Length: 367
Image 1 (spheres, helix red, strand yellow):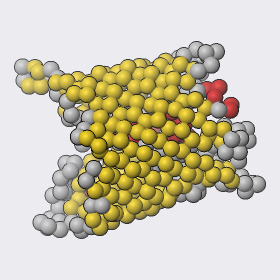
Image 2 (image 1 turned 180 degrees about the horizontal axis):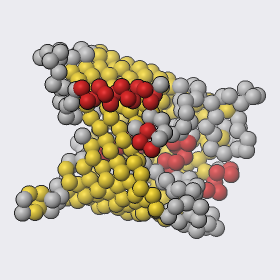
Image 3 (image 1 turned 90 degrees about the horizontal axis):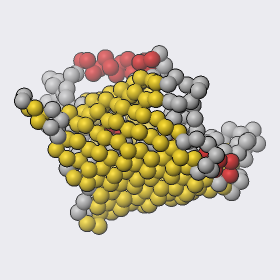
């Protein structure tokens, strides 16, 4: 069904061509009536691997996304986003986001459908505006448990189907909801009966501070590890676990100068074994003007960056935890069209394993 929906979605795009954030040129959309806009994201990534059973290099479509945004009244709007990267290589298309938003007043709205869980600021950062290429470590054929990998696998981070209330009042932004859940960013749906909430304030201009909490049901797993169970264990036994994140952001994406964001997170890893985890992750970048050529700007901006992510996990998972370090450089040909260069280095905490190293380059076009 998703594949058919993706085909219809692309067909609809061809019928109503429009640039992102503009009302589609449709004669049925009269002035003052419903608004419709389209956008998309294409990321082509080259990466390397040092694992013996993996190809040394890979060229892949990391993300191919098409989105439609509709406003049918001053109160009611919606969004549909399809992920087509898998379909481009013979897999199935996915529905990343599909929700309706009822924004009664700026300080109170209700969102129903599939969207992001309100938890941490790094997970809330959109794929088009990530400072490094990936939110966390991705090493083909090898396990690297840094903080984002832990949050993703535990379903503390990522998208989910649910209902949430949200709004903003001055410097205060909040969201809270109930979610069915999903087993990781790329996993299937699972009924984990999850609640999540996040509160953000801006104490001074250019600075944001947030607090996120989440609680979900875990099913028993054997052997113990990063728990992602949906409650389908034959014993029917479940226990609940929680996570808490304190995060910050200084500066804004796309603005010249210094930009940093990060978070400290602690929570349940395996409630059946009383195992937990604690970790921290952060990105820092400095954006400066680009290079001009004889016919105009060659690069509109250059942005060196550095990312660090560390997790300390209890139990068997602790054998794969460690520190992820990523120096990198973003070269912007337009506001959100760029070439990104990253060197991911994962240092295992036990010191018994060799570091994991992967070079990545990625071309991004966002429209």
